[in-house]
Length: 321
Image 1 (tube, one colour):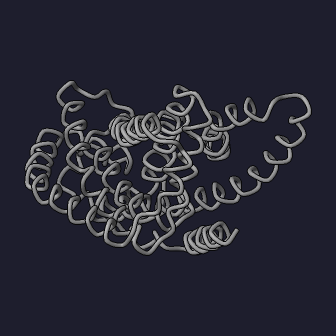
Image 2: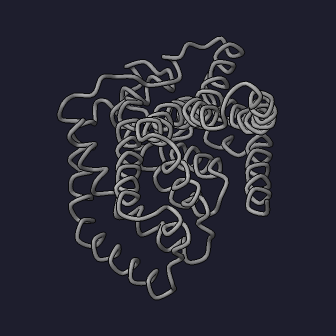
Image 3: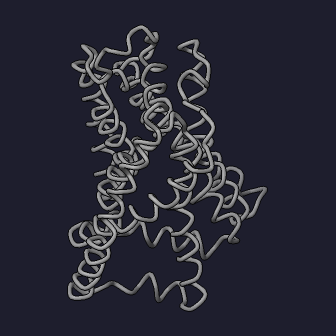
């Protein structure tokens, strides 16, 4: 049975699995260097890492809970109108993420951007696009807006979106990405809740990441990677970027709010279907407040606390290394 406690347990298992698996994979990769080139192994790793660290834990979860994939991942078909809604909403929400990212860059190290540049520079574009746009969009969404969000749904959409987004942010392992990933996670969760479809968040996530990969690839065509890595913006340049992002956000925000209201009205029935399917209610319970549940008090439990602490410790260790 789906429950916040089971979701917290899965998240704790996922974190431990990733830590252990990363160590084992590093040892395996070192052993394989005798037989394959470093470039070939790196290309293989960047493409398959999301399969290893997300899909395998999902499969283990399904086996141990005796659940089907369809029972934990909402998979309704998206109508053409919903696809258009999601594409436009994502583009309108992008300036909000940009503002958060720009402000966070003032006080958090942005070394991850150099890692992204290195991958894009050292790998063919198709491999970079698959590893940084397609694979995360599919497997991260199956994990956080599929298994996790489904288990938290009985606590109400607000708590479910917030907690699943919190873990989505923490799993990124660095302060710079954590903050904007939480905001993006809430956005993705709402898309899923109102369409009853994981395909909604996959599409949005793919658009976010895909545009970033393409824009970075274009930048690499006009500048050497070493120049981009070594180009640390000054405080004045950072503040200029923030002001520009805020200006764009102020212009687009009214359209985002208006379109989101239209989107929610259009998907009112899908939203009800999603919440009933997760809470296993019958059509006779339509009058019940779907966000009211005693299970909502159990979102924070020992599994939740341990998972959050482990994520924070791993993020700190990662930053110090």
